[in-house]
Length: 417
Image 1 (tube, rainbow, N blue to C red):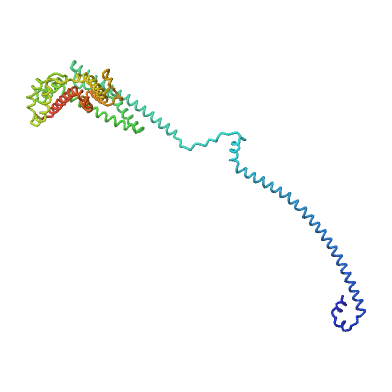
Image 2 (image 1 turned 90 degrees about the vertical axis):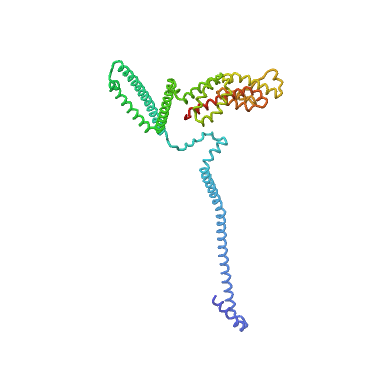
C-alpha cells in the first residue's frame, strides 16, 4: 500500500522515464490482487451484513406484524372496560329518573308516591287546651256568680218580707222601733259572706277573662238604666195618684190636660165632642197670649170635626171595599174584559202598580199608622185616586183631629199660665 501511494504520488517521474519498470508492474499486480482480495472480503462482509440485516429486517417485520395484533387485543379490552365504567356512572346519575321511566314503560310496578312531610307548624294544642280550660273555669265562675246573686236577691226579698212582718207585729204588739228595725245577726253575717264571695268571684273572673270586665260594665249600665226606669215609674205613679185624688184638677193647666184627654177619647171613638170642647173655652183663655195664638189653628180643626169623625175601626172595615173598587177601576181603565166577571187584587210581593200601592196602605193601616196609609194612597193613578177619595178624606180628617189633640195637650202641659 505504501509503494502504491509512492508510485501514485510521482507520476511525473514515471512519465519522464517513458519506459515502465517491470517491478512497478509486479507491484501494481500485487496491489490489484490485494485490492481484489479486499474487495472480495468487503463484498463477503457486506453480503453477510446484508444477510444479517435482512434477517434482522425480517425479524423486525415479524415483530412489527405481530405487535399490532397484541396492541389491538389490549385496546378492545380497554374500550370495553371504559364502556362499562361509563355505563356504571351514567346509571348512578340516571337512577332517580330511570325508575320512573321503567314504571312508565311497564317494566316496573307503580309505587305509591312518597308523602311529603307536612310543613312544620307550631303546636298550639297546649295553648288551645289551656284556653278551653280557662273558658270552662270562666263559665263556672259566671254560673256560680249567677247562683250567688240569685241567692242574695232571694235573701234580700226574705229580709224585706221579714221586716214587713216585724213591722206588722210591732204595730199589733206594741214593740219598739229599734226592735223592729234590727236585723238578725246570723242573716247579716250570711249576707256579708255572700257579698264578699261575689266580690271575690268577680275579681277572679276579671283576671281570668277580659270579657268579664266588659260584661260587668254592661251590667252596671243596665243597672243604671233600671234605676232610671224605676225613678220614672215612681214619678208616673205619683202623677197617677195625684190625678186619682183630684189634686191635679186644682190648677187650670192640669184640668185642661185632663179634659183634652177625655175629649180626644170621644173624638177617636167616632162620637160628637162639640159640647165638651166648648166647655174648655174658659180654660184656654187662661193660657198665655202666645200659646193662644199657637193653638188657634188646632182649635179650628177640632171645631170642624166636632160632629164626629170616622173611628179607626170604621176606617179598617171600609178599606177592603175601597180597595176592591180601586182594583175594578184599574182593570176597567186597562180595557180588560174580565172586569165584568170578577176582580182580583194581587197582594204580597207579586203586586204591581195600584195593587202594590194598596198593599202598602193596608200594611200601614194595620200598624195603626193612618197617616202612612193616606200618604201611600196618594201614589194611585188619577182614576184610582178618584175612586179612593171618600176613604182618603175620612182618613185625613181622623189624622188631622188626632194631631190637633196631641199638639193641644203638649201646649197645655208646657204652658206657664
